[in-house]
Amino acid sequence: MKNINLAFLGLGTVGGGTYEILKMNKDLIEKRTNCSFTVTKVLEMNQDRIKSLGLDPALQVTDPALIYESDDVDIVIEALGGIDFPAEIMEKSLLNGKHVVTPNKAAVAANFDKLKEAARKGNAQFRFEASVGGGIPALTAIQEALAGNQFTQVMGIVNGTTNYILTKMGDEGWSYEEALKDAQAKGFAEQDPTSDVEGIDASNKLSILMALCFDTYVAPDDIPREGITRVSMDDIKDAQAKNGKIKLIALASKMDGKLEYSVKPTFISNDHPLSGVSNEFNAIYITGNAVDELMFYGKGAGALPTGSAVVGDILAIAKNI
Ligand code: HSE
Image (cartoon, protein in one colour):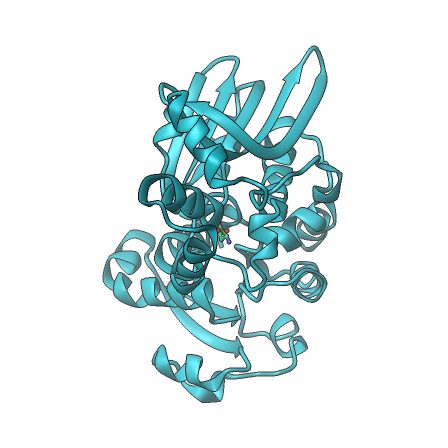
């Protein structure tokens, strides 16, 4: 059996969830891939996280060069969060021929071309399935099973925190503050939830979706954006009275060669499939000129659902090494 060495950068919600899955499903993962996986390095300042996952504290490094220059690292799993620092480590890792997996949508969206180019130069694989839609394997499907399509529209609920808040306000009558606090406690929200509630996180994800669906990179800051902080209980009740819901919708469509895109709270009628997407669930609704309409649905946040996509990328890489 082939052994694959892993380095974890960050063992928070997603990094920790990823490692838990590798432990929980070890036997079947080994059987399916004919590979075993060994963690050889961990860049995580919080020793308690390392210990609580049952990892050896001696694996801890504080200098990322000890990861991207190491001979005993095959795949770097970057789950630190942030933009510049993780992007720099990912770029150096890829240039050094290390394969990289990340759920970090902010770093991927801000550095899409640079990281792709580093992967090409380093002859390394760069995968980021977990960066959009958590556990939903939409990015792989777009690039593989759906690669024969010309896409005309991609529309999604791609932020679990805001969907959770809007659902709890609408279905349970919770206040915005109560719902946000609960979403934070459940580990859905970003470290700074401004990124969720102001639509920044959804813009990062839309930027990645557009790069893959339309081969066009649009920087997240160039996407017109409105978050949910101005959505009131009255707005939500108003939508309910009109047989619909308010959802934070990321939308990109291409008509006659013109790409249009936005992230904003949108009225969704109850007979649209996206209206049934509640709580931290996400959905990505795609239209392609061959496949027609298609919807992916699943948990868009949380340790194990997001970790599921990270593990899928690790295994896909392992099989190709
Ligand atoms: N804060 C993000 C969300 C996490 O709520 O969707 C998953 O990307």
